Image (cartoon, rainbow, N blue to C red; front, side, top):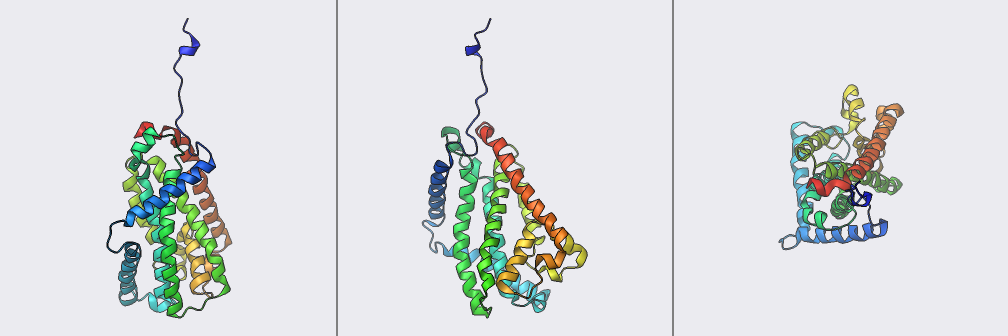
Length: 279
């Protein structure tokens, strides 16, 4: 008979948070700060590049939607609304897009070191959050200079930011954990993020969209966040997501938000122990 002690057993790799929260947080901070510094190290303009990208996109879109499609004439404070939206969506797109290949990019570390796998996509999001924080300072300077008066609802804006970070982390976890096994994920997410850009009220406010299409757009979990940002920061008289779509559809959007977050936790916990095998 075979000695049971000599039988081969499956050995699970490090889990999403293997090593505990404290170690995960220490590694998260270290990797994020290092990556943020490395991104602009040696460049002539440094951090200015992070601000230049959304500003150049903003300038092009502003010209198109005010001079060609004339959307800006229908919307109060459209230039600063567009700038705010571009910066917010840019954070989501940058973080999730970079997260796709983040684990594969750390292949040498993943293969040789025992550490919480969740740190890698979280570090990507945190690095993008550093950029967003600096960009928002400039955006709010533009908003005030444009003539938008500060109101108490500006104090609610961190709620929008927190929810945006949560959904960004969830999506980043999904794409980062699936990419080592399914390399098509990079192309798929590039297409999906472009669809989301046009399917989210970034270039337009939701109240200028026909009712049928509006109801579909507001099922997108990102859409209510951008409408809340518009109402709380730019235009207090804007209808807001609840008035634009009604509570039933808004609850569906909230449910989809929760589903994405739950799926992210489940998928990452399932994939984390075998990520090194897929590299």
